[in-house]
Length: 132
Image (tube, rainbow, N blue to C red; front, side):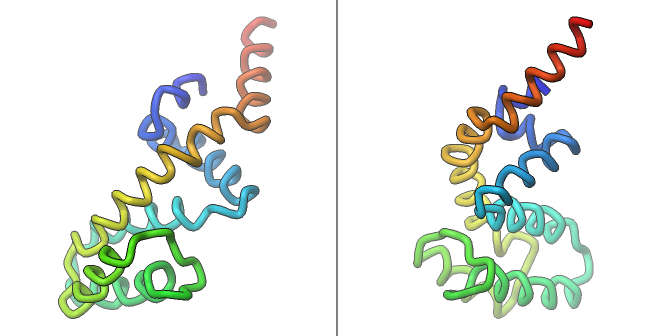
């Protein structure tokens, strides 16, 4: 658990760390970024172009289009690029947005998570159990 403070990548590579971070973001009403990032990670692994096209449209409607139910915070140019990519979606069509969202989490959500009572209490409880 203490390794989670080394980097966001380290935190997200831990199944438990990922769940705790998601819970934290949900409590902050800002879990759309991690949700989008995870959906994109799964999307990149798809092989079927038919399924990929269908999933890309769903991702676009849920996270990218203006006023989307789970709209992520990306710039207009990136949003437009993705909109154009929707004509022939491929495994990389959300990569720019995925990178933007990752950097946002790394620079904003992740440092707040490390300072949060949730994380601090978890660290404290694990150090207490080690000392017993």
